[in-house]
Length: 200
Image (cartoon, rainbow, N blue to C red; front, side, top):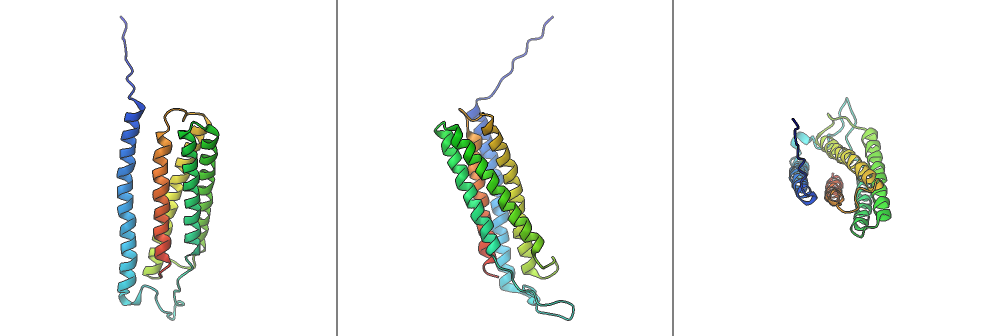
């Protein structure tokens, strides 16, 4: 007696469409969260309840002064560069240029690693603790959101580059297209945080 099995594989376009929908739903949730953070930042800044936005000096601690937003803008600039190099690689995939795809994917990966290194340095060098007022809490909130986004980007970009290196994007490259959407949103998210921190 023999058992006959049939393996049914869905068309790559069907799988790609389903994965794109999943990414879009993830982005809707993430965008809602990021926009709520922007609202909270300016709401707390405007209300300044009990003068706790940037607390004045007390006998126990010095006054809390805002830090420069330059590192947030630098991270955003590196993210924008990474997004552009990823798009460059995507154009290579569309033109069946594997060298361009590999180069764009690799440079985007390196950019995400550089960005997270700058972000970690910023988090570790901030002279505050979470208890030092509403501004500081919002600063950490944006910094950690950026960190999580960049960590995910490194993971995604590493997989993207590795698959490109192995030549798996010769015909179906919807993975690369989906990652483009993530790169753009991650850059916009970083931009929102940098914009907020420019107005302490």
